[in-house]
Amino acid sequence: MTTAIRSEFDQGIALTPRPGGPGRYDGELGAGWQIGGGINGGLLLAVAGHALSLQHPEHPDPMSISGYYLSASRPGPVTVGTEVIRGGRSLSTGTASLSQTDEQGRSVERLRVLASFGDLGAAEGEVHTSAEPPRLPPPDQCIGMEHAPPQLIEQAALLERFDLRLDPATVGWALGQPSRNGRIQGWFRLADGRDPDPLLLLLVADALPPVTFDLGMPGWAPTVELTVHLRARPVPGWLRVVHSTRNLAGGYFEEDAEVWDESGRLVAQSRQLARAPRPA
Image (cartoon, rainbow, N blue to C red; front, top):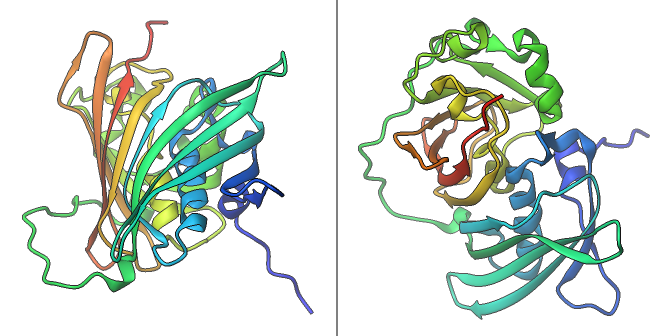
């Protein structure tokens, strides 16, 4: 008899209900999800989303979720507290707070989330959209992370969890020749082959290298706020992801993302506000 091996993503967002504490969960943030000085913001949002989905079993999917990043998360234990604000027939709304204990034994809040949950499987109606998926070369003609600059991998251990293939037209920054168009796009799937689902989309919305790389600004770009809208459950297979920005000012920039599945469906959209990387 063989035992199925859980995906690293499922292990990364795993939660255990705290005895005697309704709506409270304990988890473990792994070092493999680090980027720059902390844990990737998309992974943290997926942890919070998982906790809220456990509170809303009849509404398992995040429809709209916003997270404010209050302090940098570190590898180690994490506690998630949730509260149901409203339970409705088609949507439930709740909040979640991720906290860790610091070196002095104090509880420090890392992330505060507000989200509405529903059932994407029950969504009906025609799709009317003018959005078009990004035009990409096939995955085998794109640039894999094995060609990434060593300093990028050193800053972003989480990239080793991904099978990420970037469009050659948007990776000039890796050769010191950024296009300065503010756009990075490519194919995404998990390295261990796990199929995408709504919780994984929360990670994917923050998975590509910071779009500021294409502006000639390498370095960590910590997220201030991230909002993701889920539009459909993705089908198995590759995801097409595009990140872009149109405005960097005052040391902050917005980063918009679209995620498309193999059926050509737009399954997620996001926007985040992040700090621009500091000059080296």
